[in-house]
Length: 260
Image (cartoon, rainbow, N blue to C red; front, side, top):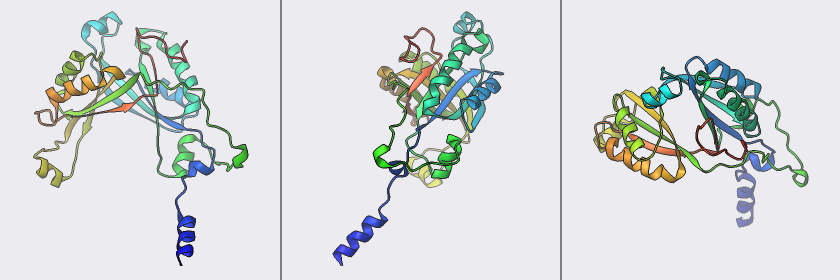
């Protein structure tokens, strides 16, 4: 019986799909550009094989003197969220860097985040823009593309805060070394039992502040934001960070391996 149970367990054990199939890794791109540039960014994503992307509005938080120095007076932004195969990021990044050089009105910033999991093979096929995933012979299995150097110098900090407290967030972040960020309007909802337990009301009017920082100051920025606009403050801010695989469009920084 023990042998039969062991055999049944072995036969029904879950095997990750990627262990038996050659899959090109997927990533999530975030591109922030002046309002009016989003459609061009979408066209570029399409040319790089992206299956879908999403456009939303935001506001830049760069100080007015910085905006004037760049020749840009309007802080309105478009944020383009897209899915992209990892081996196409270098092409997308190169195209963006060329576009950002055209004029101050075309400048922006973009970063790429590796996806660690997806909810199903069909979703992968859709986002990867492919119809069939071959099952290669293990002896001839190819390694995933390695043409995108990993960049661990930057992380993206996201702060979900009550409406009207973004200035408090950005002032704290700048004091800790951050340059600027992008604000997105959002609506919040939550578990009422959790609200009662923690004594926190999750108000509908929310704003999300996205801040790209060097990894070395991440903890300092998070600590500063939490102190000034954390969950125990009127802003009820929730801040967290996500790793960034690569960036494009940062001015005044050393070139990443792809740019050299």
